[in-house]
Amino acid sequence: MNVVEVSEVSKSFKGVKVVDSVSFSIGRSEIFGMVGPNGAGKTTTIRMLMDIIKPDSGEIKILGEPINEEVKNRIGYLPEERGLYKKLTVSQSLSYLAALKNMKKRLARERAEELLKRVNMLPHKDKKTEELSHGMGQLIQFVATILHNPELVVFDEPFVALDPVNTQLLKELILELRSQGKSVILSTHMMNQVEELCDRILMIDKGQAVLYGSLTEIKSRYRNNSVFLECDRLPDGLPGVVGSKAHGKYIEIFLDGRISPQEILSALINKGVKVDRFEVSTPSLNEIFIQVVKEGR
Image (tube, rainbow, N blue to C red; front, side):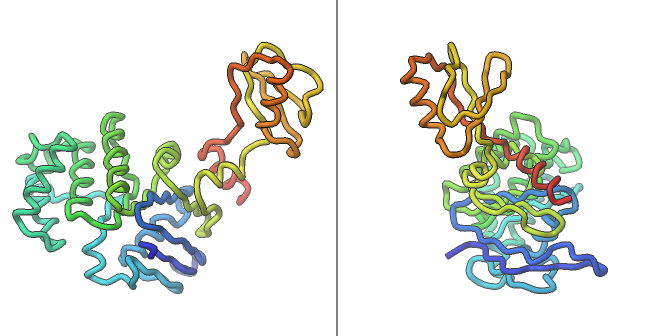
């Protein structure tokens, strides 16, 4: 059973279609990336998943059923718009948010201390949240999101305001969630984080799904027919090679599409070429993102 099933969901505001017939599914133990330019419809899609707003049409199922209060207690949500009660201490804030998810006080206190220790925030547990830096507040909200041990976790821009050390810490915790059998939705503009963490992605542009699938398959689909080489010489007459271009000490050779990179490598070795680097040219997700958005405009 998929943890999330979204079928032909649409939403309009004042006659403008913000989400247009979007469909996707998310499996258990999967980190699912949701990406797209500003105003593409990502946050609106997430808000419909969380039942904050209702779709105009289409169907959403979470954990096998339409979203209801019981299902909501099995979800953790870190929204893009942050908000902690400024006059409460960190411990009081976490206790209150845990109570909203029907956690028993003792369990909530023990798990809060365990998670605060993981994010190096335990010494700050008795500080009022208004005394925390923006980055520290972000860590507390991350803890609040996973405190009740949810089965589905939704992070909307979780790395904003974090330094590199805490960014790495959160990435490790997100990967741990997957290893524990949780499903994670990660919405962010940081394509390098999506590329590093996510199993599959959905790219939304102008309210429509423009890319959907595994990262491996998407990158393979958009890759150039070229290979980067560092070698002692480039012999003439290599089969399937239609051109080359120098990049400093590297050479990029362009293939005709009928020969595989593996066949080129075999041909080089057979000709006695000393190969120090051989890399199939694969675009980054950021490059694919820019290409797809430009094509749609």
